[in-house]
Image (cartoon, rainbow, N blue to C red; front, side, top):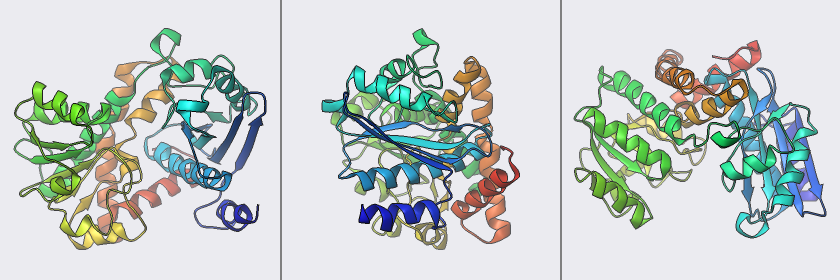
Length: 360
C-alpha cells in the first residue's frame, strides 16, 4: 500500500496530472472481478470511456493506468464536442483466461451502482460481445452490437476522423487539404488502419504500410496492389519522400529514437498516447514536423459510442466526426498564436472548455 500512497494518491490529489473527481475500487469474490473505475471530470456531462481488461503487474499499476486514461478521455471528449466528461475503467486480469460471463455481469453491476455518472464502452481486451453482456446489468453501456441496440464496430468513424485530421494537417502545412500525390506511411493496419488506407487511396495518395502481422499486410496489398509494404516501422519512418506518418498501432511511437530519423513533415494517426514522454512534442516542433494531437483526430470512435445513448444515427455521427477537420485547424492556429506545440495548444483548449462547462 505504500507504493499506492506514494505514487497513485499523489497523482489523484496533488499532481498537475490529477484532479480526478472519483475513483472506485471494485471487487467481487465469487467471479474474481477486480476493477478500478476512475472518473476524471463530469463538468460537461457523465464521464464516458472504455473498459480495459489487462494483466497488470499489480494493483498500483492498474490504478495509475485508470487515472491516466480517464484524464485523457476528459480532454478527448471536450474537443470532440460531446456532452460528456472523461472516465475509464480497468479490469485486472488476463482476458483470455479470466474473462467470464459472471465476471462481466458483476462488472456491469458495479458500473450501474454509479447511477449514470460513468458510461462505459469497449477498450483493449473488451469487445462488442462483452458490452452486450455488461449491458444486461447496466443501462449506461455503449459499444454494443446492432442486434442489442448499439452501433457495433467504431473503427469506421475512427478512421474517418483521422482522415479529416490529416486533411487539416495538409491544409496547415502546405496550404491545401488535398492528399492527392502525398506519400503517407501507415504503421498498423488493423481495423482502423485498413479503413484509413481506403480513404487515402480514394483521394489519390501514395500509401506505404507496415504491420507486425504478415497476414494483415497481405490482405491489404492483395486487394490494393498499388500499396507498398515495408518490413517494419523502422523502415517506414525512414522512407524517402514521406509526407505524412500515421501511427495506428501501439502508443509511444514518437520517442527519442524515432523522432530524429522521421522523414515525414506531418504526424497524424489513430494510435493513443503517441508521445512517449513530455518534451517529445517540442522535439517534433524543433524539426519542423507538424503533430496532430492523437486524442483530437482519433475521436471518431467515441463520437460514435456516445451517440448510442440517443439512438444511433450514422449520418449524424459522421457529420460530427467531420468537424475534427475544423477542430484540428483551430488547434494549429492556437499553437501558432501562443507559440507552443499543438499538443500543448490542444490541452489548453480542452481545459478551457472544461472550465467553462461547455463542449466544443
